[in-house]
Length: 481
Image (cartoon, rainbow, N blue to C red; front, side):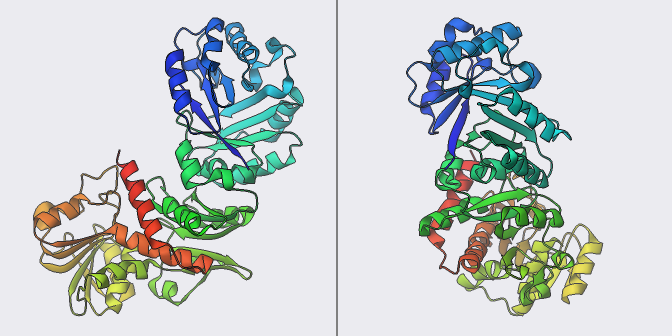
């Protein structure tokens, strides 16, 4: 079981103690380099009265920190942290630790950060770090551009006979932060001090880091970007609700083949698929079920003994809110905005329900191609108003650009508007539609329904839909702050 360490920073020792004591983490990393006018006489004050283990760090500017004094002063501050009883001090590998003397070498975290990428000689650097500190903890944090870099980090860590922490910084590195056990790390870092860090609350409440192990089942979300997605909150809440030892983590990439390689390496059992990866999986040997094959887009991957299969539960998720509201689709004029994977699923589902479907996109050639593939109609952009149902299957209006709409306000005229964007809960398009007297449907309804179908497909257990709904709503409330 790995622990959660929260990195805390403040401009004064008093403020640092206040932030430190509010932490819900197992440990705190006290970043003293942010304290104005810091000297060795004030280090003990930062540790005084603490209720949890502490790492003292005074990061140099040359390794991404704020300390502007001399190296002698900085290393003296770290030595003072050890003398004041800090459980660990973090010393940059390139700085050396000679100035710290012989005080308990096991309390040293020898660290190396590379914000430019993954060095080609990373393995050599790791060996040199271990040689410099045989008894300490070796910490390597590098910016990963691709999740496949995480396989290299994991393999490097598993070859290290001593204690180590490896971190992939940036959006592609979330797996290393949310699943430290899979990398052999004794703790993971939270906070806002480095790119891609998650909060201590997320690591505890969403990813349940303290209850994970190397045998915890792994599921994923793939596509890009993923920071706005409520799917991790929903699926992890569902696992917690039924007591399943499983975790669901974003693996951000625009390369389907890369995702399959990473998923295989880390034992991912299933994945949700979002833009831009909803199509072309069959070219990689993934077997599409009948619905996914007919639609030509997938939203779910499942790994079994015979390999990967693909499903499309967007169809169920899309249609269920329409049926629940008793909306008559047969013969209705339904306009779908967009020509991507979501538009394809919506147009296919509506056509199957007997609707008169029109596809409208700013790219007329794409609208024509999709309409031809699904045997529906293509409409000009913007589409003529007075529709029975308008479906926004574009990302326009998604947070943080939530003040825009795919159509002008004067064009929003019809009976029902269904916006597949779910963040924010009420988009500008839905607000305009409501003001014009139309009935509205939020994309959150579709999101929860399709996620429940995915959950049931992967686990063969009934989905705790209410827990998933609450988690999604809580995520959106927090993201809007």
